[in-house]
Length: 195
Image 1 (cartoon, rainbow, N blue to C red):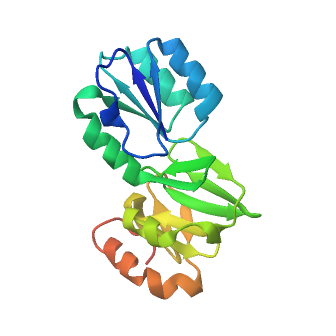
Image 2 (image 1 turned 60 degrees about the vertical axis):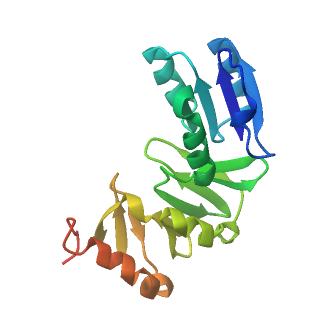
């Protein structure tokens, strides 16, 4: 994972805890954007800054690089630890932040990771996903072609979950028994669409 340091830092070794991390020190926002575009793409990464960033820069970074996590220097250690726990790496070129992930869909051996405002695609079958690790983040497989983040489910439809953004994620018969405990979570405490 790329960790970008924007500004002048006296001690940088505290930010690298994983041998796969790559630390990049920059002084200009323009250099940051160029490096993000050239090397990071849309993979999760962190930007640690000392001085507050202008609002228009924050908006532009959020639009162009939605997986970039902005971290103030004051609480960088804890936020980096949390970010590392949330990032799932499928291969050396593709990793995804599971925190805001709504659901995963498999179409023609391509995985589509759906987030609130965008989605990402990788050429892998759904069977490659480490569901035992993903379940700790609330992401459960509910169909041969779908996995849903229970943390972003707001209700039920007949044979399906409904996410915050209104997407209907099917529950197949083979996963129906396993989904019983998750269905119970939404009975009575949210608006159900079935019945």
